[in-house]
Image (cartoon, rainbow, N blue to C red):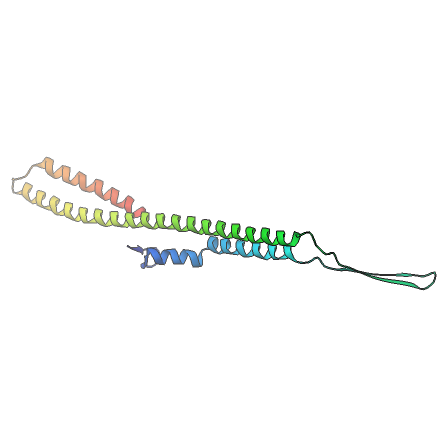
Length: 173
């Protein structure tokens, strides 16, 4: 199916092209992917060894100088658990991102086919108006020759005006 975007200077897009444009240029899609990268960056720091602490003391009543360096050693397996938690948080963020992208694509496809339906409906109505114009012309010609009924002509003209009103509505869609 090909969609013609009249407002976009007659640009024709297929469904696949529209979806690809959405996935590459949509701020929502970019934000969704960036959210995963943010979670990954935040969780990488969870499994790092703590920074060492260094200190220096000097007492003035005699010469006493003390230099201290401390390093906490996590021996209880906490870093491994934090790595697992970080990996799980990243997987959750990726799945949420995929869900968001899937929903965006679904909404875009629905809008695409709604617009395509509106364009097809407009084209069909225009063809019907052309056919009805021919019927009205024939009925007027028959009435001038005394062969047709005035009622048939009025009914055809009314039908034509109703169809034109629907056509204008379809164009607005």
